[in-house]
Amino acid sequence: MKVLNDKVIYTAGENGFCHNRIPGIVVCDDGTMLVYYECRMGRNDWSVSEIGMKKSADGGKTWSAETYIASGEGKNTVNNPVMAVMPDGKIVFVWLENYKRPFCKFSYDKGETWTERVEILDAFEEFRPDYAWTVAATGPGHGTVTKDGRILLTVWLTSNITNIFAHHPSVAAAMVSEDGGETWHRGDILPITEVPDPNEACMAETSRGIFMNIRNVSDRHRRYIAVSDDGASGWRDLHIAENLPDPICAAGMTAKDDVLYFSNCVSENGRVNVSLSRSADFGETWERVLLNESGGYSDVCINPVTGTAFVVYESRQENEIRAAEVEI
View (cartoon, one colour):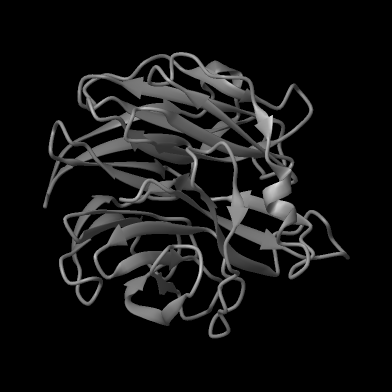
């Protein structure tokens, strides 16, 4: 693998926001890429915010001006945006308001226009008989559209009655839609006991099953892996990935022809050394290319037109969002 180019697409202070965080990326079948993120008025997770988006229609050479696709209306946080692109080009966009109210809307023209939002709280309420959550979030990153046309979103949930703003203790799970995002249902909560507070996760589909790669707060500083046939239930092969060091930070994952691509900060001691890793043996071994000695949250896609990977990531202590193109 080789880094072909690496561009800044956002710098802190642009457009009146303190900084932008939590980037995700999706790609359409014509190669158009959408990058989306939280535009925060402050520097914490509960800051008043908007969801911003930039597009590239030329393989990452240029990026559009920032547009806003979900609003905190000057009083709320809008958080953890996730998108998924259906085979027919429909883009499904899911996010939460104040880590409590999940919404969904659609675009049929590559993000130029969007439908009105629809609240999808009922799907998250399905968790309550098993887990009385006080905070909920999607992703972050992008959703996975399976070969049979289902949409899978990773989610994490917190139950903390003494501090309803806390993001711990937490559990990880998935949401599934079988009708292009019109309706949603919960998956199983992953039965993880080896590591504390599994939360922000990413997914990829392979012939061996759907892999979930999970952030956690273990002092071992390693990612956690689980596999499912349908990406929502029957989780198996749960284990600590000793070959995936991680400083407790969100990451991205995708797959192409059974090759896994994973973006994260390859470090045990801070959000540095953001890299793209590649595995042709279902995660048994990885080869890596360093993108930036800085780092932060990241996500990854494979562009079908350029045949390259694009990693969108935070850098310079969350003061930049960059997009790197990698020859794979």
